[in-house]
Length: 230
Image (cartoon, rainbow, N blue to C red; front, top):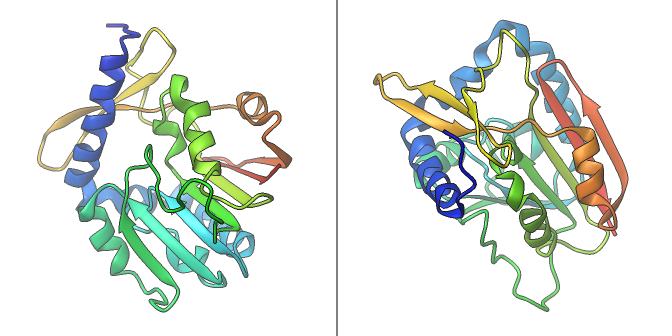
């Protein structure tokens, strides 16, 4: 069934947190696949370099899989997620609690920095999040995320690449082109999850007039994007 009804997208936005709350204890199994280990090792090293000496605002921290490496040389790190279930796991990681903090927050309603106030964040990060943003909300989401950061901030996004035969197939597309996957949890429950696979060209269009030094890096099973805010 295809739909462009905004209420359907809102329903997906409400269902997604419940799905990830249920998946919290088994989420990181996806990173156990042996063939993905070279990409994962590359990303961990790369993230450490990206945030060295920076004060970072992270959206959708999830279980914090990347955080031990990503935060290692950061000056300060503010993680956030809507789900207390996944944040509990993130807090259990071997992190420097003197500089890494977490807070429950809606990724679509960020309020870490009040309008007109100076931001303490000279970097922003969202890992494996952008693929869940509806196509019609991409520009809106980027705008409110950027508004929480300093001018000239360094922004890093990373997510899954679609690999035929390895990725969960897209079961349907809605009228605006959002893809959906059918996923199963260990309790046998089935969930329809929005999952998009943006391209470099789409990002360059979205970031036109917003950013410079745009760098897209495709790996086998992931992609990364970094840029500097105008």
